[in-house]
Amino acid sequence: MEMAKVLREVRFMRFEEVYGRRSGGRLTMSEAADILGVDERTFRRWSRRYEEHGADGLVDGRMGRASHRRAPVDEVAKMLALFETHYFDFNVRHFHQKLQTRHGSTRSYAWVKNKLQETGKILKAKSSGTHRRKRPRKPLPGMMLHQDGSTHEWVPGVKWDLIITFDDATSELYSAFFVEQEGTMSTFMGIQEVIETHGLFSSLYADRGSHYWLTREADGKVDKQCLTQVNRGLKQLGIELIPAYSPEARGRCERQFGTLQGRWPQELRLAGITEITAANLFLKEVLVPAFNREFTVKSEEEGSAFTPWIGGSEQLGDILSVQEKRVVGKDNTVHYDNKILQIPKDKYRYHYVKATVRVHEYPDGSLAVFHGPRCLARYDETGGLLASGKNRLSANAPAPLIASSNRC
Image 1 (cartoon, rainbow, N blue to C red):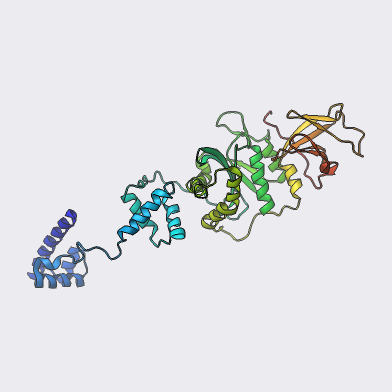
Image 2: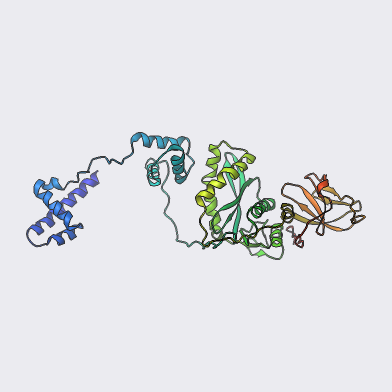
């Protein structure tokens, strides 16, 4: 209020000086208005009020009067109480959405933010740093996808890894789920979910995690000759794996995780979810669709770069699995991960002793033994034989590649 009084005095002194010069004929009406920074009509109105009421005529009638748009005290108190009791860990934009969708508020985002800042509920954001230009998005969906994992306390007292796969062109989330630990199997799960739903895509952009790439030196170049299981699977599918060499290069992915970490833990808390199976179901049915509705952007061009997957789910699963070479023992068994896999009799060979076979391990823990393109048998996670998997040819299977298993 003191500042308002000072400004009022300054305004009066300037007007009085200009009015005197105008009355003495040294300034035209237009020149006097220009000096005060107002139009000629305003200066005429001020002059008339000054002549009729003196200095009081220049006082703004709105001074000291409450705005008719000011929110009632109880509305502000209710909003602050909601933030303190239910939405204390929400960011402002997320909180503003809840006020509108759940509590019928019509206040603007800026109003909510200002009230929270005025009362000390949130701090003002720091000024932005060096200006950087974003990398242009791909023009079509399916040209490049991003995949990464984020370890975070998604529910109180527990940290899970969130694995997301999304499109560079639109930011649409194609796959998102929680796992105990990010790795090869979680990568395969995300890729398979995308291909089964949308089709084959052109490239995958990912960090240099050990399940994607082998690197001989810390922070060094990736080894493109010695393939990991993930790289081998993508190569069989004709998908290019692109390594990211800095956090800035993965900026779009980092911003995506920033948004998710600022929203999903709060939504899980409101829903009372603390168990990973229920959390994954909630992601699939509620959180991912809501995220895509709000944050998906339109691609630069119409159309899609996805190619339909013409193989079956089982064939895709055989490609997106951990594959290891083994030599069959004299008793027609294969040793794998402290399990003994018995190869059953078939009509094609009397035995497979000393034959080189491939063991496939799938994300659900089940196993299979292949001889060339033929599946000899399938097993459960304990190594028990499953009769349905015996002697089945994986039709139209790409020529098998064997990954390094990080031992190149």
